[in-house]
Picture 1: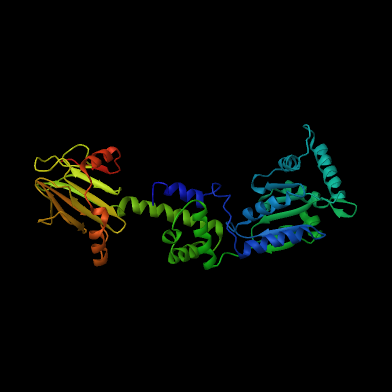
Picture 2 (picture 1 turned 90 degrees about the vertical axis):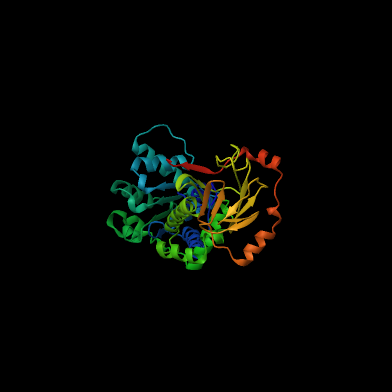
Length: 390
């Protein structure tokens, strides 16, 4: 993966950053239809339950966006809840301007607004995410709100999300008014293996990634599905971790390496991370070999997706690979390049098939560049040298 890998991973699967990326699946669509139908019923109350990472927050946020076009909607996170904050948040999101008041006055203002909206046929909606995390006083306030009515109709339509046992919360005595309204209950289901494949690849593409089938082949998707049990939030977490590990492996293991030695002593190690790498005595070279038998621009390494090619740049004393003089060669793992009194061992090279060998040898890109053009292209260096003590 490129240097953009970590940024792409966070954009596709990170918390908050990728919140705008929504990938639909069967349970997601069914949940949206459930919420829409439940709040159109006379009782106007719905419970959406599922484990952490089930996608509850994403679902209610999308549905809230649709409802806000027609009626006042307030969304509140039960994890951050206190009684006064809930009232303040509802008034602010409903667009009710109030001066600082006592709690009783604020409740009266909120009740009057709800009644007025209900009589006009636009009963407001309250969505409490993580309702199972509410404190006892806030639950009491919620119970009071559930009892408000105007002209025989409930003044507030309510959606609560929480863990699998959210329905049990409504049956408690402290929420008897919610229980009287006989809330509709929907339990989310996880993604299937097939849905997980579509989910992972789609999020990556929407975030700006390319060739998602290479990063997330079927076997990887199925493994992530197994680890996450198909829950989208957990799937995001494992995908983020998988991409981080892929970057680490590519950065530290998969790049070809060149180890420079002389008389058995290691002088330097280079990771080859760019398409073309110049070897020579001149300081403009990527791999500098201080040897009078090495030309200023002696040889070039050309990196392909499936191989590394060595080209001699018409050097004075020639280039040897495994003691055989050559003008161009497809390098294999552990090949030894001899330049003057120095030896360059190449590692981390992929195995080359005979077909790839022939194709690379015939490629037009093996044509030697004009040396002046090579010199002009030296402005950018992407090979990192790690110097060792001699």
